Amino acid sequence: MEFPRTGDFLKGRLRDNLSLDDLRYIEDLVETVEQHGDGARILERGAPTERSTILIDGYIFRSIDSEDGRFIVGLHIPGDFVDLHGFALKRLDHNVVTAGPVQVGCVSHESLRAVMRDRPGVARAMWFATLLDAAIHRKWIQVLEQLDAPQRIAHLYAELQARLALIGRPVTRALRTPFTQFDMADMCGVSAIHANRAVGKLRELGIGEIRRGDLYTDDWDRLKAYARFDPDYLYGEGPLKMKEDWS
Image 1 (cartoon, rainbow, N blue to C red):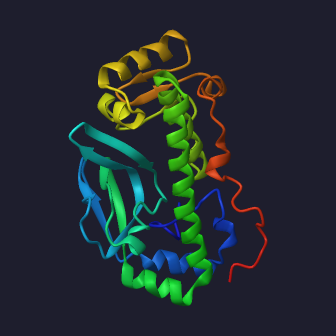
Image 2: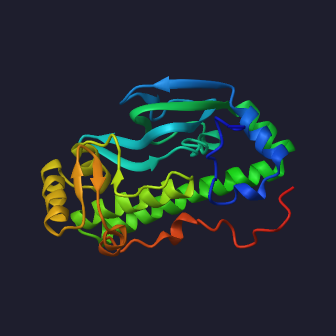
């Protein structure tokens, strides 16, 4: 691969808008590559930060801990800049935590300042990436408000399947994840017992079966219809004006 560290960044969206020179520039922004095991906190809530992280392989959660437990408020897949907004905020109101083993690339905020100053096309792509995170976050809020627990879990996997397809990792029958039942519960705003019942409901309906975090289904269309999944918020087509000048 010509871009082993950043080849999934905005893949399936507006990556084609960027010139080869811009893509090489983005690849060179990654100064170090790190490996982390399951449950590692890459960034602690409230801790000052001078770097941002792009996920190369694996899954990462955004989580908030409180007296009432843990709340998972975001999920990242390869190609995502998981804490790009830390460049502007300098600290985050949530933790950045690995879900299973991951490989990440680190970009200093000094380098991002140079992007803002010298590379407007790259800066705009990164702005798009942060706005995409916000769109996904809004959808998660809507799902928590409108859907019951089985539908929330179905929507979680429907979204993940669609996001993986965008970066060229299509899922057919089995979508494999490192998620535990506690993870699913914390992503869907229910107790672990409630999540277990919801998983049972999906199995009873014949929509899908979840075993150790892996979803098995023979009918993704039926699962997505049950979850009321509409992929528009993922902006798979990129911005409306795909051919405009990004320089």
